[in-house]
Each structure stands twice: as structure tokens, then as C-alpha cells.
Image 1 (cartoon, one colour):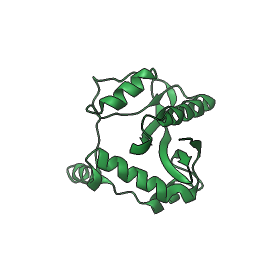
Image 2 (image 1 turned 90 degrees about the vertical axis):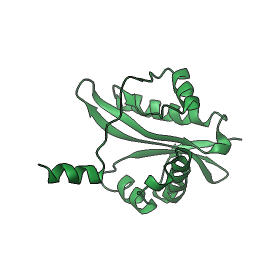
Image 3 (image 1 turned 135 degrees about the horizontal axis):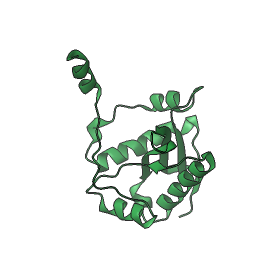
Length: 159
């Protein structure tokens, strides 16, 4: 099946939201999605967009996305974070993931960033093998650290 990779537009966000929900179900975290299509439209397409999104399209249907945003490394300088690379189940193995990752890498290179980083679940061996086959270094000795809204509130209350 042929597909096209392009920059997303505001009108894509309802379908992007569908892919985000598909990923959340795959990761057994469907209940954890709080963002809405309206949030994506506001946050990605205002005066100061918070993210950039590439979409993969076939037959007027979005079948994949790569959502990235800028970060700054105290060791490297400007970097990009790949928040999610999503390929719908029916398109896995079609080369779509490679094409989306290629769009991200070319974009980062054009911007002159020093690194592109992302996380992958330790049980998602197909994704780990895919990223390693593309030359990515899966750093298994690092843990992700987060404070969610409730955690931030508890932190503030205990100051």
C-alpha cells in the first residue's frame, strides 16, 4: 500500500487523536489519555506551536504520525524529542515507520539539532529492534522520571 508523509495541518488532529488512542490501547494505558483534538489544534497551530507533527496518509486516511518538539540539552544544546511514532496496526511492516523516522531525522538535521531522543517500552521488542536497526542507541540503563499533576500538587503542598 502506498502512503504519503507530510506535515500535519490543524484539520488532521481528529484523526491524529484516533491514532493516539490506538497507541494508548496497545500500551494498555487507554485510560491515561487526557489530551483532546481541540488541545492538539490549539497547542500545535497557534502563534507559538508546542510541537511539530508529521502524518502518513493513504487513501485520505491517516495511518501514522511522528510528533516531535524542541528541547535543550545542557550537554549538547538544541535537541528534538520524538514523543510518539505511531503506525496503525494494519500498516506495520510496510516501511511506514522507517519513512516517518526518516522525516524526523531529516527535519532535525535541517534544524541543526545535536540529538533526537525518545523512549520505548522495555517490553516492546519489535520497536526496540526497529530502532536499533536504524542505528539508535537504546539506553537500557536509564529510567524515565515524571511528576504528574497530582505529584506536582503534593510536592507543592509539602514545601
